[in-house]
Structures are given as structure tokens and as C-alpha cells.
Image (cartoon, rainbow, N blue to C red):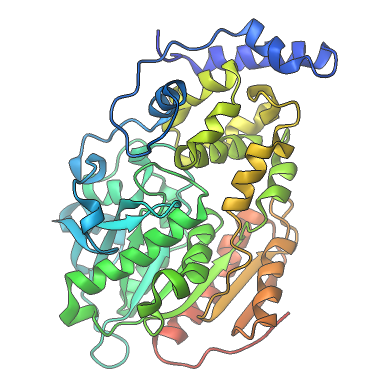
Length: 443
């Protein structure tokens, strides 16, 4: 048996282990877990794009990857990626018929693009994005501007991406929440094209900011390459909330170094409910109602940084290789109802303070980087999950570096903050796309 077949079995095992660990002497927990739970029997790893892994970690890494979609444009790892430029088109498909119902606005065409990008270690990778072109005329002049809608995908499963839904139509894992707030419909009716990147990359590395930032920037490059006569002179405004804000933030601060030629094309970046301090959020989520989100994000980041898998005990290995690997974002939250800390599935006695986890925190920290483009940052004042200090710190840091920043504090918590902040964010992005100079309103 290579993978657990029941989430219920895993939950019962986790509860049993939690009770045993709680009663055990200090320092006895890791070995006790492995005494109670046997290691999963996993098939040996075959080919994989991440090299230099020990055989057992390579096998675990392979077992924890999302189940392929069955569609080569999402699944197939292209040959010769190193010979391609970031943003270079690998494949494209007209998906107008299946994407039109999601647009909720008349469109000329929807194009699914597969393009070369770069992973968190600087190695060649690929990503996908969907470009929707409206029938409405551009609001000013003849140049079609573009809203980049970085949705909060927040998922481990490969069929959970907006691109898969655009290409295959509504399906059981499609998240209707992707249509609210109606960023896509608003922008299309306004006459802007909409670009929706699958910013978690081919490994579905949710919450990895470099992967996400590179995917967004290379999606912009791909659009300019696929239709240079339409989008060669376009401006692009990026917007994202929560998990989508991670991608928007990554794009904003990585652009000066990774995509300097986009300096004039990137008109501004709006982000709400931003998580920017991973160590603080991990401590806050661990063992609470948001522990399921922390677990999902940890497993997703481990796909991009597989050395982290060596920190899992036997129970953690079973969970990582279980059906959890295919969960969509709307299922991560319920996993936290038990309030199990990640300590239950990891070997170090204090895993969030371990050297391996601290190394991941360091690799995903983008605070030393500065965006060259204008920023609009909004956050709920009563956001008890992601405190407003996270977004406020990014705003203040950029204000100190002379970036044009607007910060909005909203009288909401996290979920309502998305809806409450959306009108202001859209107005701000529209102003950037139509050539209005960016204001500076530092907190």
C-alpha cells in the first residue's frame, strides 16, 4: 500500500498520536510518533525536475506531488526549457468556448498560454495563464490595457487552477469564489483585457512567492509575445488578495531584477490581506483554526524546496502522500477544525524553530527587495488571521524607499476585507491603466 486511502484514517491516527505525544516526556515525541505509525511504502522515484535528492526523499517528493490533470498543456514538462527565454511561448490553445461563461462579460477570445518561467532556485520551469480579450472597446485611445487578476488559488491539486477551469469548463473542484469579487467581469466590461495566471507553477507550490512572482511576470511577457501588435505597448496592472496578494507582491518586488524591461509596462500593483512575514504567520496559525492552511502551505512549499520533506516523521509522510495532495483551497480551512499543530507530523521537537524551517523562511523572505512600480495596499483592521501589521510593514518599508504607495485600513476581518477593498483597488488600477499619475499617501 503506497498511499493512505482515507482522510478519516489519517485524522484518527493524528488524534491518537497527539494524545500520546501530549502525555510523553519532553523530547520523546518524534521517536514516539514513528513507533506508533509505520513509514509509508512508496515506489522509487522516476524522473523528476528537481535533482540531487537522496533516494528516499526523491520517492517521497514524487508521492506528494499533485495528481496530473490528464491534459498535457498543464502536465507535460517540456524538453529544452533552458534554451528558451523567460516568457517564451511553449504552447497555446483557444479556450473561448469553455472560458466565456466564466467571463460574465462578452469576449472576443480566450487564449490559454503555456510559457517558460523560472523556479525559486533559478532553474527553468513553465507556467500557464489565460488571456481574455473583451468585445468592449478600450476606455481610452486604441491600446488595449490589461488587468492581471492574481486569484487566491491556495491549492495543492492540479485541477484547482483557474486555467484548468477555463480550459475544461465547470467541474467539481472549480471554486465559485474565483468569480467574487467580479474583477474579471468589471475589467472586461471596462474594455481591459484580463490575464489570469496559474501562479503556483507546475508543482502547485502554493505560497512560494518567488515562483508566483516569476509566473506573473512571465505571463505578462508571454502576452506581449503572443500578440505584439495588440499588447506590445499595453500597460499591465496586477491585483491580488490573500494568496493572490503573495503572487502580486512577488511580481512587484522581483520585477526590477527579474524583468527590468517591464518597468514601463507594469503600471501598478494592488494587494490586500497580504502575508509578508512567514515566521510570524506560522506561529500564529500553528495549532489554531488556521492550522490546516499552514499545513497545506507547508506541504506546497516543500514541493519547491523538497529538503523540507526530510523533517517529516512517519505520520507527516502519510499525510503528505495522502489525498491531501490534491485538495483545493476551499478544503484547507476545514482541515484546521481539529487545531492540530504541525509539530505532530514533524520530527524536530520545535519544528518552526528548526534550522531547516528557518532556512525556508529565509528563502521566501522578499523584504530586502523594493518595487519600482506604484503600490496600493489594503488590509482589514480586525483581521485576526493575518494582522494588519503585515501589509502596513510593506507599505512603510516602500514609503521609506520613495515608492508611490497608498495604504487603506478597512473596518473588516480577512474574508470581508476582500469585498470591502475591491472597489478601491479596482478604481486605483483603472487609473493607473488609463494614465493617471499614481498618488502617494503613505501611512
